[in-house]
Image 1: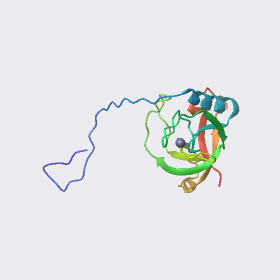
Image 2 (image 1 turned 30 degrees about the vertical axis):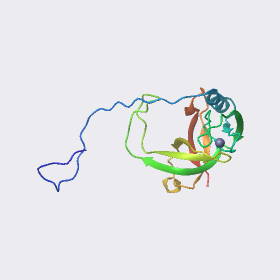
Image 3 (image 1 turned 180 degrees about the vertical axis):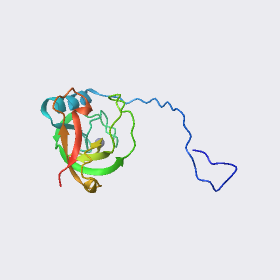
Image 4 (image 1 turned 90 degrees about the horizontal axis):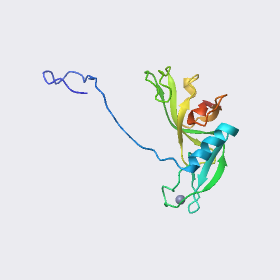
Length: 159
Ligand SMILES: [Zn+2]
């Protein structure tokens, strides 16, 4: 965004352009078990830190607080609480499908019961009034699952 230098009182406007932002996310064998459990059993596994007891969902190899290596997988609920959310009103091409995602849709960070960290995913946007921080939600799974995080169709509000 830039501001018109001729008229400093004019509103900001948007210019178009492209941005390339490479990033890496390291998966561990724990992530494979996490996705396999969702695919085969429609259940969630987290990993528990042997030092501080914190449970990470999705799992990661090393505790972010005490740097202990983690291997103990524990089952957590498919229900949890919204800790942050937004309703998206503009379209974009979903990188996982290459298809424009229908709007509106909800996106949220959800802390599953039994976990200490939050999982980012989509929210069902049927009843907007109920989409808020603190809402209770449950995972809705795809009928045909492939071992991807998208085996979770979305989370729906249950209260
Ligand atoms: Zn720890």
